[in-house]
Length: 263
Image 1 (cartoon, rainbow, N blue to C red):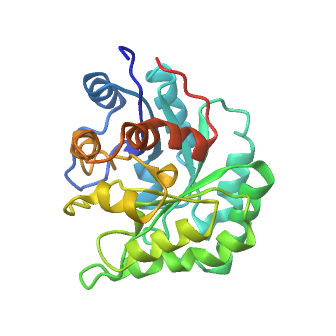
Image 2 (image 1 turned 180 degrees about the vertical axis):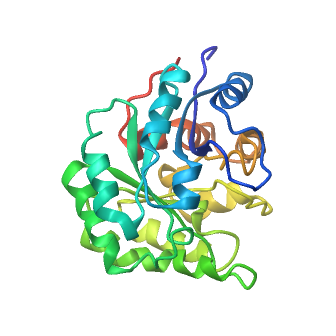
């Protein structure tokens, strides 16, 4: 195939505040996509994630236009300002670039199983929206990660079985990953992406052995890590071509229910 094929299902647009990361501008993202054969991307706004209180949709709408429809947007929902965020999202439901909802319990200092997330899941269920959630393992050096361990999402996954949940980072590098795999195996509505700094030996082969390849999505976590890191791991993995096609494109289309024809 000569046309771009790949979908990066997990990246971020815009400044990360005072943190030093790669150039997060849309122009740079599109240049990377062109170089690596990435047709489309699904992203969220950094400011909304790190500062909370808003969806970041206005910035993602600009990113969608600037990228000529190649960078789709997730609405960040902070449970501490759920009414405000969901109201803004409801007014944007007709936007053709909308891919779903992004929640980040660790950034927003609210456990993933907290009742304040109930309206978010109900909204996603009512409007057939996918949720991408930050997930990770318990961490000695970053205690807030305990708010996002995969097991905390189980109550919502089972209460709202029609809502597609993508566990970002597949539960991280430690005990969270087996828990994320368990949920993906037990629940038809749970998917895993492996975005981020999960540099584990034979990660792709291990995931494909542990869970159906229809549940695994390629994501970069750009600008925290570059798309080429995980992309090369998939392309060089000792798995079938069908598995690679599903991981690099088809699963993102199924999980997010967004029509993304090759550019």
